[in-house]
Amino acid sequence: MSPYETSPAAAERHTDPAGDGGWQGLARRSLWASAVKSLALVAGASAGLVRFLTGRDWPVGGMVAACAGAAVLIVAGVVAYDVLRLRTTRWRLTPERLELRSGITVRQHRSIPRDRVRSVDLRADPVNRIFGLTVAKVGTGEHAEGGSELKLDPLSRHDAEALRRTLLHQGEQAEPGGGPLAELNWSWIRYAPLSVWTFTGAAVVLGALYKALDSFGLKRFTTRLATGLWEWLVAQPLVTVPLVLAANLVVGVLGAMLLFAESWARYRLEREPGRLRMRRGLLTSRSLTLDERRLRGVEIGEPLLLRLAGAARLRSIATGLGKSSGDETEDAAALTPPMPRALAVRVAAAIAGAGVPALVPHPAAARRRRLVRALVTALVTGAGVAAAWPWVSIWAGGWVWLVPVAVLAYGLWHAVTSAASLGHALSPRHLVARRGAVVRRTVALDRRGIAGWTFTESYFQRRSGLLTVSATTAAGRGHYDVVDVGRGDGLDLAAGTVPGLLEPFLVREKQ
Image 1 (cartoon, rainbow, N blue to C red):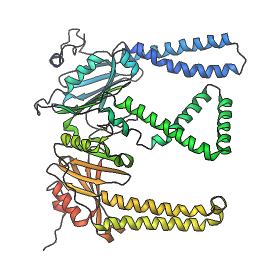
Image 2: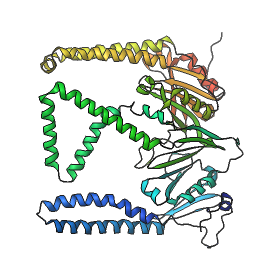
Image 3: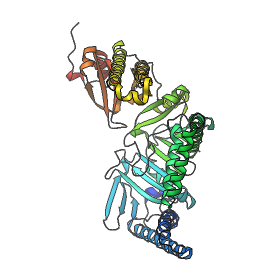
Image 4: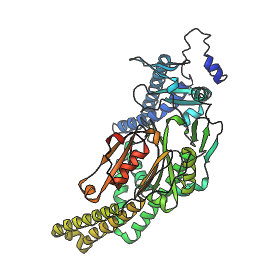
């Protein structure tokens, strides 16, 4: 019996009736899940085998028998490997440490101190959910390398939840309050298509479909289909091009909405004593519990299309979070789906414990720098077009002069928008900085998490009396910048953010 099947208190006592030092195995139901997952390998191997045998004129019965034999071998091999993995993997939780022994050919014994555990990430894909299994990742708040993260793959759902409560129940002496900070509102799905992927979704789907059909030996069919489609497009471009663009948009919108539903269904962000917990996912369930001692701030992201719709996303700035490791591509620091900006600001204020103060605008020299840069870029582009005119005019004609005009228009928009976005402020707890034109980011960085400063001045910044102040931290991206701030204001901002850290290096002018 697992010592975690009763309560966290029972786990704390860590009874060991079997006399085996408290070591436990992973969930045995993993064998069934591995067998089901191996069917994906069976499908790919069968497709390749059919393609190979068809070229050698094998009868249908022979191909079926060969595929069945390959399927048996693959499933048996996967299950046999999982049996060895389960037999050689043991873990235990003592009052001081979480330990894991693993490895079939190379044995490993890894452990992390319980007082350094800062997060427990529970994840279950559709197959694991069918068998009541969950993968648990326990992190210490450092970057996921070496001994800073232990992965128990898999535990039963009950044991994984009990382990989460046991590891993170210390710290209840923090504020006793709690409750939901945000829950999914399905009206937010209208923000899902506001992404560049919406306009490229059909191309991605067609590329994946072409590759899949090719793997099944249908290359001739896909080639003829692609050739016919191209000829159709060329024959009637005034009709087919708008039709294809519309179809691409429809596929992209539907794909974005389906992806939103799968990722954020059942979303709930809540505060537990001393920690944050986020749960979401339709097919693959995800649960992330984050110790607030690991939190160093929040970031409000506003990509252009979302910003035009009045929406934003919220990310945490925490030690050891970023892109998921391994084959996972999701942003592990994401705290919310796209939502109305006003709500994102309220959630950020609730997490940070303070609202966003009024931002101080940056000097006019910052806008001049951006305008000059836009003009220079347009002039260089125009000079390049003029130099290449004898060649490009053959296929582009007079339309090529639209290139520098478009570059100038975009540059001016980018210069004005990015200059208007610049701002910073200092609150009792946070350094707040905002920047960005295409993606505007507002960062509230906990002043206690700032470990140092970096000051950067390019040649043109020095001539304009500007500099970039970078706050160094162990969380998030590692540094957060206040760009193109006045030299005196930037130094005063850094000195005031962490009193005493910069003072020995400052020489103040006498009034």
